[in-house]
Image (tube, rainbow, N blue to C red):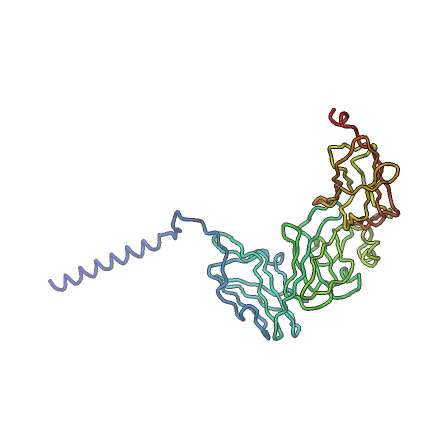
Length: 375
């Protein structure tokens, strides 16, 4: 009886084990229902070497995150600065991203690896936006910055697909022949920002890099440049670049003088229209001047308003420029049935294509009487 009991117990245990095994084999892993959707990006737990590491001498960077991740479109997103001859190789597995360096690093140089929006959590695809890892081959991290904005010269609008580049060579053709040392993408408002720069003199360009070569290769591409070298130091004003489409081959275009590059027309005269197109100004409205292209510079002290044929100066008026830079408003309490003259000094304004007045200009107009305006 004792043996029979033992055998019975063994059979029961075996049946239980088979049931458990079968149940486990058929089960599906189902995430719990309900609760808020995960909207948080991956979080960096550890970096080897640590972020902002000094005296870096290795050829690999390992990044460990708090959840399973994936890396997407790395070629489009990754910006390694200063630009290497050969881009690093980026691999990932489970919660780890590995960056394998393929180029010799320059001594005493601060490097940044900007992953853009390529690192995402595996389950929901939340990107770790503009995650940047920094290290130095020297004993300090460069910390200077350069910021600014890129505007389309023709209409004052934005093209946020353009990139901004820094070169160290003063040769105008460098933008055609070489990759830049530093690259920055534009945000949704057309702004750019370089970080961790050394105290050097740079030459600033922007272009629409449709070929993904980081070079100015097509005369049909949007292009912009700073008129003079930019000296990066502890305090530097933001720089505004005006992009345009040039005529001529890129190598010829890049070698031209800046003033010649900035326009595709031989007519350099500033073009404008006024609200008093037929010589009549509504006394209840502002007088305004509209320009063909946004203004790069505007000096209101170089516009003077007079009244009557005796050129009596008017004092109670002011000017304002709209946000597009293509319109200037003149606000004044107009007198009805009065003759006015607005004198424009030849240097009062310059548009984004470098156009200016060739000489002083005069705009003459009369105000309507109140009854005519009311009707």
